[in-house]
Image (cartoon, rainbow, N blue to C red):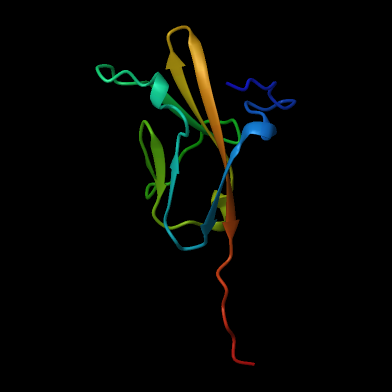
Amino acid sequence: MTVEENDEGKCFSSKIRHLKKAEITHSKMITCPDIEDYLAPYKQPVMTWYKECERVEWRSSISVNTTHIWIPEVEEGDGGNYTCELQYGSRLVRRTTQLKVTGRTLWMDG
């Protein structure tokens, strides 16, 4: 297990982020990586999701549950750092995924 200090003023270390890419207008699932060992089969885990270390109002089309965030249609503003936080006994387990949003390649007649 790797333990890294959080970046200054952040809730994660940029050294151990997971990277995902998504294309604008496509759908994307962001999962909470490497969390299985902390999920007890008989208990409903309490998971909190953050974007850029802050709790946000997700737009209505985005589905957020314990293990993932589902974005049915990615927008440019969806890029950033998504952190899932799980209360595990007296400890907090955090995982961060960086979502890079790429534009669609459009062919234009010139």
